[in-house]
Image 1 (cartoon, rainbow, N blue to C red):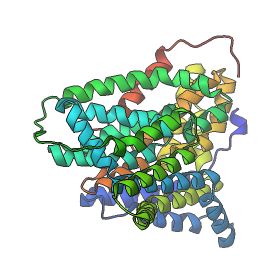
Image 2 (image 1 turned 90 degrees about the vertical axis):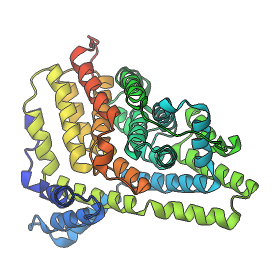
Image 3 (image 1 turned 180 degrees about the horizontal axis):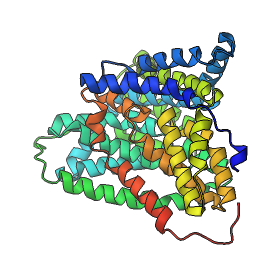
Length: 433
């Protein structure tokens, strides 16, 4: 296998290093994560990427960059972002978020609000299949709970992001799940069964931690909280529609239209108000979409110049056995995801190499797919420049990524459970790839 893998070029990683230095280092030095917008940092990385490799014309490099921006997966995510933004804004304008928050405040004991928020995010994300869409829809609820209870907003956002990554790792309609299963030649149902052995224990442990860590927080839940079940209906319909197997685009469109109809019926807005809310929802995702487009371009040039090949070679040359192969797949996807800041793209890039590793070391396709997906979600849920944390920060507007990461219990526990799966879970013998 080693002879089929290009050694690559470590210098091709300079654009990604440029981003990390300009974004993370400056933010840490200044103590302000708003000093250097991620979009500007990736613009600098883009300039460096295009300037490198003088053997190729500027025109060709820009063409490669543009093709990376227009990758079908990038475009799919852009559509999801737009629809998720519209659903979140229309639902919010209609009053769905306030009703959902008040419903929770009315019926949930104060010491299990955050654990309940985590569970809600788990169900929604596994239903709609998108972690970012879940965060856009549920993060405002966490912010509102923090405002009404005095609880640190980071705890609520950490629970939402954790729950969102739970579904992203398990949902049958998640792009990461689909990519992981397809690249490894695994059946979706088999991959789900392998994944649930990792994700469910991690989720249960996380719930227990939130119950313990928030039980003694003093919350002021006195007063009457008004809610309307009809305003909560869009979330319920979205959940049921997704569980029924509807495409994520259809699910989000149905949710947006239902929120619009309810809003008009209740007088929350008229048809023009609905149109304005939809447009505002689109625009609210502008920074995230721009960031994803530039990431696609930079990754395409990094790949073209051999940067991704270098990362892959550095890992695979050290593999010696089946367990080592599984750890190699895990490390491979962690590093690629750290470089790309997008777990779906990371799986698409690393998937074929992971398949080579699993074939050589006779790793079951479902195990390879599960490890690939789980460790990508572990990484994506923790990197401060990933879309999930950036979207949550954008929704809250009162917190930095580091203010959330300290409460991100689920991704950390997921990583531990995934390692336990590799070292302790019995492998089926006699099954080849």
